[in-house]
Length: 627
Image 1 (spheres, rainbow, N blue to C red):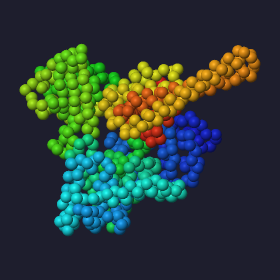
Image 2 (tube, helix red, strand yellow):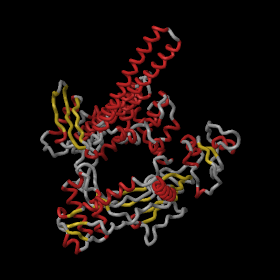
Image 3 (cartoon, rainbow, N blue to C red):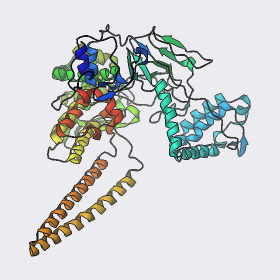
Image 4 (spheres, rainbow, N blue to C red):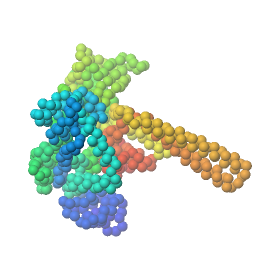
């Protein structure tokens, strides 16, 4: 056992990079100057409760190998030991300076502390379009008045008479001053933040020190929501210790609440992976403090998600045959389920969930489509049986698509829409629970969301094979990758607004391209002159000079080609959000394998945070991986 672990940790003789599983798990990994993965981490031995960074520095392959030796847990049990400090609470409100005033009806008005704090939330957003929306203004003013003293309520009755300008200017100036701080002051602030991170940003999970994701409570403010959310502008209240449920192990040191406070509850639930939770007051939904995406449990969950999607590959043809058969079922419920599943499979539509009336923006998914969201065209643009979709999907992003469908699907849709009003449900006999129960019967772990992951990953893999030219340089291959990613984003309807800076950044890039073109033209002329001189003189120095000018020309042409690729990439993706699918729907092993096969640095695809999230894939995937 000792020799096997020494090989893995690099102790003893010269460190080796081959990693082999030890037969048994030691009580605690050795912590003296060992090499975890590629990192040598010196340091004195520590007790299990004060584990150093060694475990989080392990490569994923080593983690799994050491994990093989750990005691197996019962079904549903996520951990046996969980210890942490609890959440870091947002500091209390600091009053405005006396010379910064709020004005009502043209006159300065001293506000109570609670009223003033909420006024600052609105003032900070004065330059945002949210504060121009009537629903935002009404919700803010309604919630603000509830927090006012009775005297303030008697005076402040009209938002239009409120002047937040001086407060807004104060925060703008404060932000500018922060940006202009000298390097030493910025370093001091960073050290303070690092100290908080070190104290609250890590937990002990089964004897290993793991990073926590969001260890801070959300600050109070005004709810924004997405799209035309009916609750935008409402007050997000400050989270207090009395709102927070702590989750840890019984034998751990239970985190202490801030002085003068107590926790809402302390739980010892090892079937969940959250460390703390509370209910936010706008939507009454649970918020959680979770482990960092780079943690062992999160990585395992990611891996399992993509493995389920990979298993779908083996049964998807059977499932497709089944829903085609159900198009002709005598039960209308089965027909609706079959048509909806066809849309989820072929168009990567989200399933859609039931929502309370008026509680959220009017967004829908496949199961919650209404008659008004589709139009049927027997013929359109030279195609038959065309369905025209037009609805607001997740985050109030418009989904508009015209799709030629199979004839039985078209006929069924005509049947489903017959004698219905535009506001009626298209699939009135269907909901996501019924759909997912059917999918579970077809394959263990299968839900409608798995189809989205499966189709996104398969599309990326197929597009990369079709678009990648091995002869291209790195820039050309990256363009191919982004085009493949773009095909997935279009399939999943991952759109974004054109950035406000887009036109200006494209103009700057075009100016650089024009300047580079001029340099290329000048270099071409210099090459021609050098060649003419060599023809006349046949001098060896002249020949060397020709080669020198040709190398310069080649370098400039490569730079120009790279800039043109960059411009094409920016233009093609100006309204496409590539990041969403990359982080949530695409098996990272496809990307890692592609990078390794074509010699692309992984840093060109994933940033530091993303590399931490996908460490398991980067460490374990070879270039021959197939989804």
